[in-house]
Length: 135
Image (cartoon, rainbow, N blue to C red):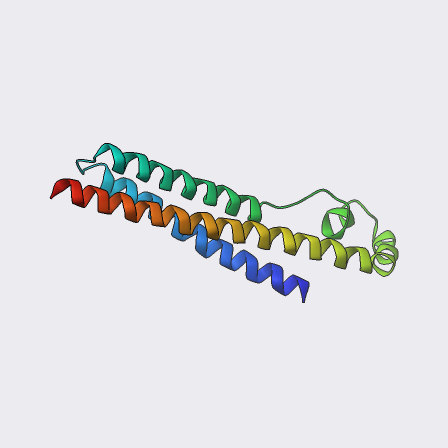
């Protein structure tokens, strides 16, 4: 069950990372050709900074943890006989480690979603300020 949660988190993270990247690229493409007011630049810059922060959290979430304390990083250092002994002895530790990993990934994902929402709201406000300044 824990491995399935980790897989779902990784899928959500990948989709959100692609979305954030597209918003960053689209915002840059549109904004560089517009006559922006100072308030729009300030608000838009804050929005972009939040999106960059969200991307950083998402990248941290998918970064592999190769500390070697449990699971396959540990198994890579053991002989075949030692792996069998470790697998029967360390099942609870592996489940606990995977559970901590899942919680850490979900925490990063949740924070990234919050930053994405706030950054998106600021970009919408910047667009409204730009449209209002152009009118």
